Length: 533
Image 1 (cartoon, rainbow, N blue to C red):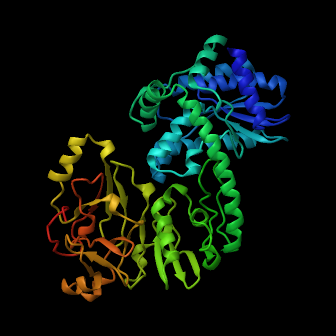
Image 2: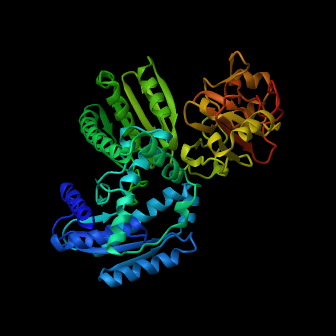
Image 3: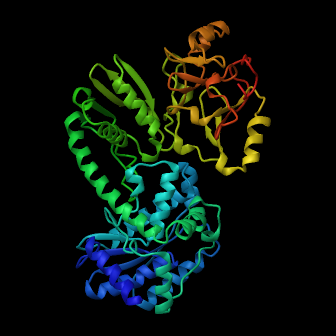
């Protein structure tokens, strides 16, 4: 068994050109079964293909047994004569400061540490970062991305080689790994969190994949790996075509923002982004719809620090914009404004933005209250973690708090009860059906063309006329913050909410919005007071 698995992994390494003579390899080793197996196999490969090998262990500072894990890995490295690097990171603080999930924060920090260690040890040859994802991890990630919403790239996300990252164990299962360790007599550390069903990935690992292999097909994991390989080949081809067509129709500004270094594994470098992109629509609109969507996505990726903040809704909005006649515009995350003028589409950054929420950076107290001068604040999708409050500071108010409630995080009966019986009857707390929102949400002042939905028949009224009818003083109209979905206004805080976004029996996700301070705007003239409206 042990020789068969070694031969399989060695063949996989050679087939994908993972390691060559004289390379430097920094192996991420947590002490778990996967990473211990990978390290042992790499030491065997090293005898046939001489390369420099070092181990990196990252302590995230969360688990009580983290010190034991580090000691275990250090002892293993000492026994095998492998250089050992221990790094400690503040994962919780990093996640909180950037409004990331702990899983995403941990991943970014680990790859940053791996890159730093690789830079220390590199002296000739290519630098490689070896991580121990296996075939089960790949299948779990495919399902996770599919359930959450993804395209071809997301479904082939865990690849054998991506830039400097290699995954030698992607061709073997977790069961094969543990059998190998038992045969060679190696112990490993158990991460207690892997047994918990708190994380979505663990639910897939413990319940969905075992069911698929037991009840549907015993080779489910292997077949998903084969599909991932096909999708990777497809994505690589489409990426090359996207590059070719992108260069035909897209012009990027020459000067770019400076600063920052790219974290391995991060979607985009925060400090090195384009401020303006121009797309020639004549030829662009003649391309296949698949290519048009990919080009628009590529353009937004060049302007935004985090790929995950770009959703299918944003691409659909841009597609709609390119197909309309006349001049139109669209607000996007991170202060990006898309403007169509005749046969050109401009993507412009309207202001400096915060790397997480898209909130414009500036001193609100120093801003004059005049049309269009107050900062627009994007409520980016990345800032909304289900069940966790996300707070936004807004000039002239006590600030806004957003909480996204999902059915998956609450029992069905409880979720129904919350919707039908416990919607807050409060002028300054409103609930909206999150899935009815069509573009990025913004907290901003009014614009020409803004409107509200005023009744169940979905009749509309302009915000301008509404403010006149409500006798809101002219001096206040341009300084009042509105919650906007494009030109459709969800809420005039202290006044009306739009009926289009009301919570109904079949609502699956609720966005709760609170205005802190509770003294903004005036009386509430909603058709039905409170969040039901």
